[in-house]
Length: 102
Image: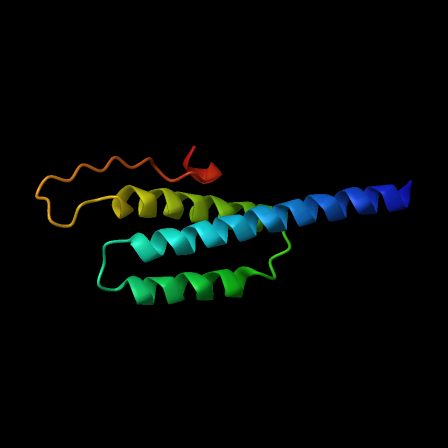
């Protein structure tokens, strides 16, 4: 019974790790399309942030960081599709998706 609980926890952890990896890759892809002269610096900053937080174990801390990352991805995507030559840009952003703001 105990090993079954450990297996369930390990599979949940693996699933969370895979979805975090997918989130990380999506953010990096969106950063490459982000219309900014500092896109390389932003890319490196994102890599560093994920590396610094990869050892987080507290589920609440992990979920807070994931919520921030998801919000950041939404914002990157909102600006990534803009035409840099156009004078008419419309961007609609959601508010932060953290529990504290609800």
